[in-house]
Image (cartoon, rainbow, N blue to C red; front, side, top):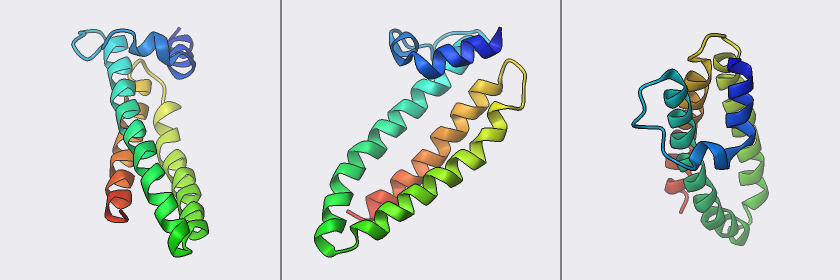
Amino acid sequence: MMRILFLLAAFCPAAASAQSSCNGQTQIDANFCAKEKWQIADNELNRLWKQVKPAADARGTGQALLAEQRAWLKRRDATCLPERSSGGSAAAMFYWACMEEETLQRNQVLRSLR
């Protein structure tokens, strides 16, 4: 059952964000809340990338930055994937919390490149 809910959360962002779950009291609410928080951080990452990448391209360092970003994505996924497969009803919450934390750290790096 939890796997179905995780898949729903992963592939149906509209269902997860239609109403904030951060005030809920169930584990499912906590799982969705963690995903919502990651989505906010990820949206910020995308906004920062749209600023930083063109500036890096203009300096001639765009390809290096792209390679760094791709390497970071692999590290992030390798870091957080064990959380998702740990099992239990809170696995999705731990996974999305890890994704959020890794993304927030990357956002700080991208901000320093502006």
